[in-house]
Image (cartoon, rainbow, N blue to C red; front, side, top):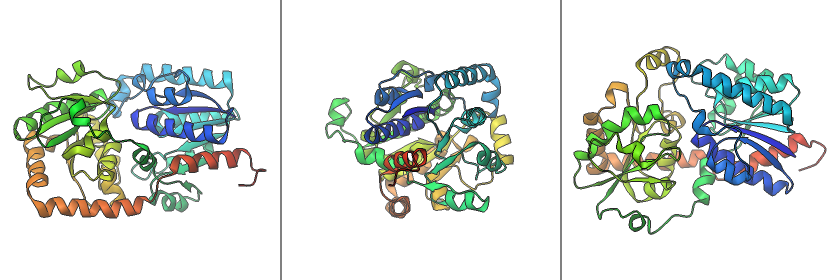
Length: 374
């Protein structure tokens, strides 16, 4: 089988890599072309047609400013897709780009699979009708998505959450502190996101928070598409260690975390680290989002639980004073901290067991080979 996978950001790159590994188990001769990051390149042993670092634009205004790059990327992928005509196109999240590719592929007779549903339940629910037209099979990772799609007359497969796979397969480094020459202090993890916009807007506030807790060692989880020098420009002379490709190890030893809204909020919860969620974007993008988004929360933890389990500080509220106040509660108010940890247990029960990558691979194989009984 020839597979063509597209992921546009770091989290999708991780899930794409694990799916590639699962597809290889089912078919030793499987071949891959990828649009993704370092993890997918390593898993497939193929160079990416486009790397995630060239693709990840976040927010309405940011997309407008980068429309030339986005158009160029779309054109390149479409041409490559027709040139190689895979047995299956597997799209991973990243809906702004991937739904355009899905429409193109469907029009050219290529089978379209979508792994990790676009968040159509949050805004623009009318997109479901488009998804029904251009996606052959949808694989969802959030439990409530099955009922949502059913209301629109669409059958989807719930496969569990691939973050459970990633965490279950991770070998934790017991010598993490020593290997990174960290101080002998309790650790606060800083996860400022994987996009330039997120990092540039959040890092300075995080650094101000770090100055307020001299009894703790703050450590930044660096995104793989940047280097230490990039983060240092936001530190204002206050040196904070940056570790790369060690986020799970960092969270494992952290007493608490400050986390940019995104997949990392769920990872942090699954690793039982009390957290405060922060988010900042272009003011116009936020204004538009507040008019069209139909959910009450932005973090995956709160969305899945349908209640405020973790504090969300958005835009002007994502300032060092508010963050520090919340962090102080997490560190020093035992009942507050324990309540969050108790809610994490309930979250983990809802999330279920690992195995999403294998389940998706098996379903793709079944849908491509309906004559073969599972």
